[in-house]
Length: 239
Ligand code: PEP
Image 1 (tube, helix red, strand yellow):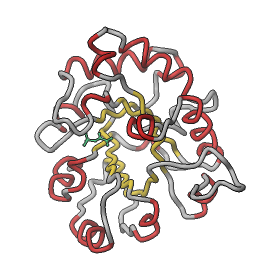
Image 2 (cartoon, helix red, strand yellow; image 1 turned 90 degrees about the horizontal axis):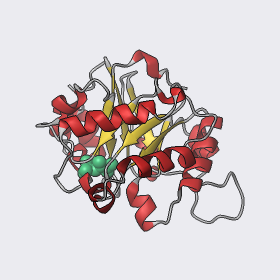
Image 3 (cartoon, rainbow, N blue to C red; image 1 turned 135 degrees about the vertical axis):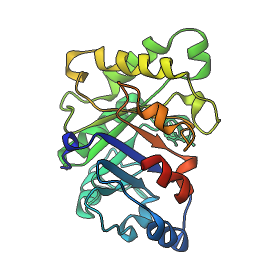
């Protein structure tokens, strides 16, 4: 398993359903990894084997994994198949999967456990909707997501948490810096076991706001969607 303790910051590119061979060839030629940080590229699974970086701090991540280990589940990829292909990280419970693919906290928990058992680090995504935020339910929603999605076996060395307010994903909107820092502090204080977890922020991170967000004392890195598709922009974020 990747040693998370050695990194001051962790940056994850989530390409979602984007990319092709010429895109990734060009991307990897231009990608400029900073060795103090851990950089993870989550491409669509079919391209994971083709992602070749020549930097020990550059890793591949999947965007999802099956909750099943094997069997008659057409179209699925298991955690052990990801391990077989040297994948070190996997997003779990991204809000797009929760919204469009009915992924519940229970599934997120099972998937995360399967990944940990295969020495793959799950990046467990949590976050409130705009309606929940407006009703001041953020703390309650995050608390439930944490209790139900994070397996008991998870710890700060084998799992990551990503706080991604649903209303900030792909919208250009972000919480204030104070709000981000306070929510991250809240997450780390839900239980003593979370105190040392690395908590990443995701939601409309770009080169113009990444430094101020990542510099917040309770933020340990960023999960970047749209802006990660532009390698020049991503290079500035991870520099
Ligand atoms: C994401 O996909 O996790 C994400 C944070 O997207 P964006 O950066 O585009 O808001």
